[in-house]
Length: 122
Length: 305
Picture 1: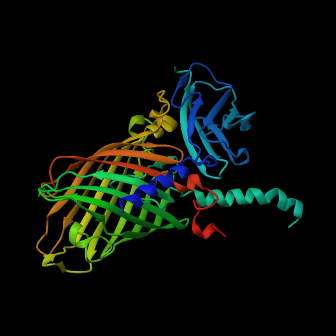
Picture 2 (picture 1 turned 90 degrees about the horizontal axis):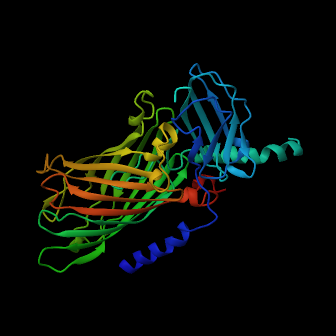
Picture 3 (picture 1 turned 45 degrees about the vertical axis):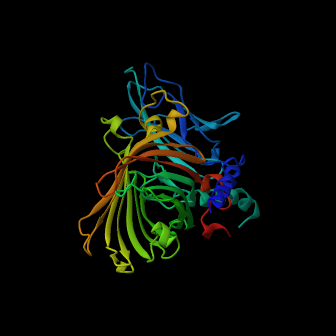
């Protein structure tokens, strides 16, 4: 019986090594960094994900403490980098800003998240 | 519909419909990812497989030592329902006697996802698990000669909705199980089979959540995917002469959650004198079928056609 179990486990190795698979897109890192303070208003927010995205179904917004949008509404995947999402910003006065993103990875898995960064307090 | 319009919107509709059903695939609630825990049942339906889970248990009260190699499979039938199958190969080594080996009892389950609340990172699930009689080595390994029905309620809650003034508490999450065991046979070989109340919790601190949603403290692979946790699980007998007797374990450990699989390891510490003494350990390799095969066996069966 143990042999059957071992054979079953061995059979699973190629499954895990399958090269064609895609998965949920996690936020890998961002600039400005998650939870960071920056001295001056950044021109753009850039997010890097762990998987390539479907740009038509991926979006990001940036709002201030009053809930008003302060981005330029031009979220787009970076040229030649399908796991990277960018959006331009209006000039930001000192304060705390919330980045909200929702993306769909190329295998159709949706994920979402929010984080904040501060301007002029770092 | 105009054919040009269909060509333009058809692929989008397919993506959106697929994305909608995938939203419940393994443990997501909003921006919270709940890993599959080792000791306690997960509060979400899934297409996942543990292959294998290897446990070296602490010595029992009689000194016997048990080693298990377990396989778990969860498969979604619809986006909100799944079935589970679990079995294990066991090696039992009593003190002063030769070791005996064989299969333990087959366990199956059916589960329904009651709710998923993204903003509050909350999950709820109800299920009915069945441990089947005469599916393991009854005489040698003590596998049951009776079937047990176990209704359960499983839940998960992330603390991401705490005020932002408490940033470093927000990566915490807890999952838990509350259930009962109802044996279908009152006694076996003169020994009563009591009803049991079962309860367990997993307390997790998600470094992926800290990195993505609270503060990037500079962790990179593999540390940015670690989830330290402590699991506890208990079973308290309710009747038939065993009322109030409790067994359980405490299992501190860590899970590394990758894109297609996760790896977990925990120590096993007896929590009551009836459970045993000393310590053991468990290792689990767990595969996300919905991420590996998103367009085939990783989808709910209701979406295969």
